[in-house]
Image (cartoon, rainbow, N blue to C red; front, side, top):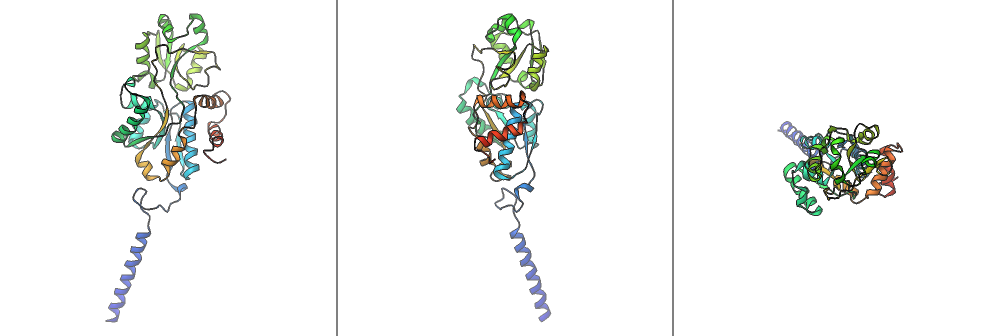
Length: 315
């Protein structure tokens, strides 16, 4: 009958239209389809940084590289207290998508490996392998700078006791206060290794925000702290970086730790992050730190100007 034919034809047309619409709908990123949502409308990529100027600058660089290369929005959480100790668990929970991390920090603090057991090249390879298998994360690129530890003493203390090497501290440590950030005080390659290697017994040991260490030295709240070879204040403030005469310190090359599901969800992100590979020297990092800490320039503008100068992003 004709009315049955018309109903059947109508139903068939409706089903075909629904099927066509379903086929045209985008699949979720990683599912093989192309997203119709513009990059700028995506959920922001969550970036974390440790509480130190260098990390603030690097976090801004990562954000700028991502938005310039892909259009994805980013959200930066600056200065997560405790550094690696709190950022890594948050990464595992999915609270953050990526952050700038140092090779020896991941090796010793997260994977609990002995720093003396492997070369820098083998360490990076194993970091990528073990982070993937253990956490569903990877390391992308090496920025180039090596932010390794150095022991820093207030200038008047160094002159009073004629301190030039870390070994010199052993004779007077019991008269001095050491101030260190929790990350350094707890990690096996940090304060425990320093005191054991050099036989140091300090008068007192206090927790201090990593961003306030030089201020605490200047004010006399502490006498000794853990510095970094890219610190802006080295050579600028009245402090002395002691020679590591027993070659204790390992290398701390910075890289990006990123969740693999984030790389799958945001096409093009991996290529964007790899633009950070090899762009920084120790001297350049120290200069950027100086511009922010001493000259009080905005860290995002400092990061932007550097990336433009290097041709990584457009002006």
